[in-house]
Length: 175
Length: 431
Image 1 (tube, chains in turn blue, green):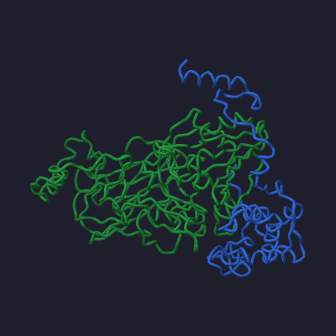
Image 2: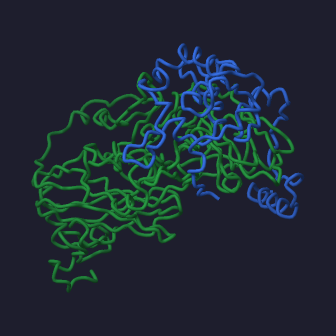
Image 3: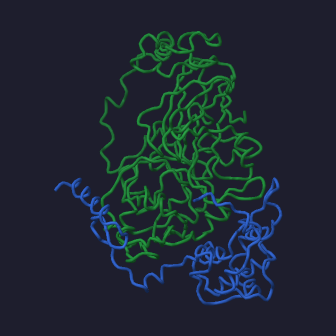
């Protein structure tokens, strides 16, 4: 059977087979089963409803200490005035000629702050903060932006409940 | 024959539009009498510039040795990626751009493909790299690069455009940059790889899953959500670019490739695909690649790159070399399909001539267009306007900004105007 015939037959099998769970187009089938332990080590993404958030917790004051040490050089004192992205302020500017897009003025989900800080920050040492340090830095940034209080603790239960100020100003074009 | 030969605005039968735009078939072999005098004049002026050469030294001594991997000619060393800029204090969080005005045809050389990285180019040993597919699947699976390389592949020619391409054109003043520095976050390659749906089918996707999350193995762990329809449609895991394995800066050893969609979604150095029921709302799809309108609301998930064109020769970065016959050349593309036509104006948009589309004209690929132009040496404005096979027409800059505002940053695709000065200089203008 030629290569073309193999794939043509495979396509027919697929079409006739129907159900996604059982029908498999003829392929080399070289995927190796991933273990739950492997997946747990790789799966760092956080859904907007909080699924995927790890245990641990942090408060703004704890985050301020981490921030001063690991974030401030690039993002400035209290999230303003650094050489890199401004993280604080800008609320009320989005419809002006000079919009200031920050975590506080623009980002629609608090879970994204945790997800992004954990996967990508600090820039020169990404994925080195502990989960509680990430919660604390997230809490600090949310507090600087006036979104949570100084004593509010961020953890897997509280973070997804934070309503970001710009949350309702996004229009989904897809689907 | 030009259908407009009786129009008094035009000088003779070859004219296709005002101010010297000639019939697009002028340079074709079959154009016959149409070619006539102008082409002969062009040939004559070329000939008069040259005198009989002495025997070049390359003909009297043996040439350079064979080599394992070729490089561009030494005389082309200035044809490099341009406007290499990174975030303050960083070296790999920014972009470099394709020098469009120095290139021809529809394929971008791999070494000149634009770059956009969020924390540098990782060094990845393909023997160590693995791709994990998990989440809402019956069988979570990992694939080595060697395994992926055994799957049936497809080869397709597609452009990739960063959604921030041409973003400086939203500014109040036109950027004083070369064509490539302004518009060079678009490139086009032949990509070869494995249809993503084959691997998703092998893993067994839960019918309730509507999205995937794609994540890279770079220091930003760059991640984007992709609709399941695209993932099960024409999405590809690209392993090869222009016939060779991907370049490191284009995602070696494996990248996601989503034809027509904004470049950021074609995640490089692909490490993980998580099948999900909702979008993950990553930083890049919420706070960055969303389009802020004048009213303060933002469009999210604006995936296809819109119909667009730009004249690349002549263009800023090049100069006119005296009055006479030229071929205007440019690129057009659409993230919604094929280019149907490109019109060119040499009088600032008063009259338009249809350009010749250089075959092949492919969906989601750069299409080269050309049209002959007899420049009279006076200052004027050149424009190009593309239409795709969905009937979408490139808007003017004013129309685009009236619709979306000037704070958008992304998805700029308006008609580009190049001012040709009598001095031969070419400038970017809002006209």
